[in-house]
Amino acid sequence: MVSASTPLTDEVVSFILNTHYEDIPAEALRLTKQCLIDNTGLMFSGSLEESWHILHTYIKGLGGVAEASIIGSGAMAPAHLAALANGLSAHALDYDDTQLSTAPSRVYGLLTHPSSPALSATYPIAEHLDVSGKDFLLAFAIGIEVECKIAEAIHPKHYQQGFHATGTCGVFGALAATAKLMGLDRQQLKYAMGIAASEAAGLRANFGTMTKPYHAGRAAENGVVAARLAKLGFESDPTGLDGRWGFFQVTGGGVDDQYLRGRLGNPWTVVEPGVSIKPYPCGSLGHPSQDAMLDLVLEHDVKPEQIKEIRLATNSMVLEPLRYMEPTDALQAKFSIPFALGILALERKAGVPQYKDAVVNRPDVRAMMAKVKPYKDEAIEAKGFDRIRSRVEIDLTDGRTLTKDADTSRGTPQRPFTPAELRDKFLDCSAHIISTAEADEIIETLRTIETVPNMQPFIRHKLGRVK
Image 1 (cartoon, one colour):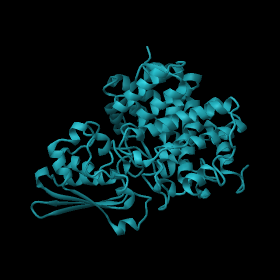
Image 2 (cartoon, helix red, strand yellow):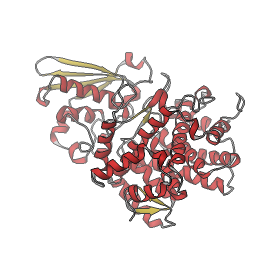
Image 3 (cartoon, rainbow, N blue to C red):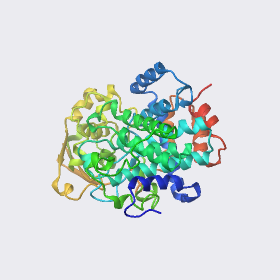
Image 4 (tube, rainbow, N blue to C red):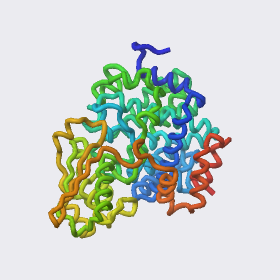
């Protein structure tokens, strides 16, 4: 039993220890499986990125015991390094799911990417221990829930002053999942929380670089390391989230505990307010605007040569992270409003093929980006940051102005992906590594993961592709 005087660290620990598969509502399990399918596909696509190859070279040079698979590579590594590689690949395209907010003070789009740290840690430990699919799904669900509730509870100053929550809060999701699979006891788990609190890191300065997805990888790796150290008897402050020198105070200036106390699994975050599956491989703060732009172009059959100017009215929390006005490569383009809107005007799509260096530097793309003018709208700013509000305005050469307001995008609970759309995204992400038949087999296994008796063969031979 917890009370208002119970340290929040203890509340998180109790939730991890006391939550069983049967405690998770059917809807929460269904939505967790959506995140599972989505992020597994992303691990395949991310393994084609230059950042992943650099990291893979680094990991191979370290050696160590081959405990777990690096998804999509045919290689194995110590479990913590497999988590590192899988986390980077899951977040490499910035195409992984995002946490929604429940209040105007909570900054939607600057909370956490829930699945990439938690799943990237769950896979290698589940494989190494050869747990059942039911235990795997339980651990992953707990990881997402802990990560999201911590991200929402910390003061918004945490994000506003420059921390990247996927790195800082993601470590707790990775730890929660790992600890559940490893069966840490209460004292060990308290120590693991304290270790993780000191490992939490990630700065928004690195948005638009290879280091942003590295944050997700390090969060996954650090969660595994924290659990393993604690299991061996490594000690820390057992209230690492709390107090004057705890995680909440040091990195955020405090905590609004009403978002955490009594709220873990009540309701499950994947159900309320939900988790957003990304429709575009770029920063989620631009997605409502991108959908609005695409809708206008398609509804009015706008040709590129008809466009005189594109304006985006939005708030500061969108403009600050999406800061690259003249991106020079695909990584910067993922955080660029001019590219996000300009490429839709030119190609009517913005998927993996569009977010390439060569596309970003095409003359027609550069010319269209120059026509895009983002600005802060004070009325939109005053409405708060629980939704990503914007207005797209397109001035045409014939004198017309097309306008559309936006505050949500495809993939959110308001406009959820269908199973077919989720499959299409998985196929797009995995096409260069596995066949459509192999992808469909994996998707079907993930949809019924609770029936898998042993995870090791599936992870090692179907996902890791270890021969």
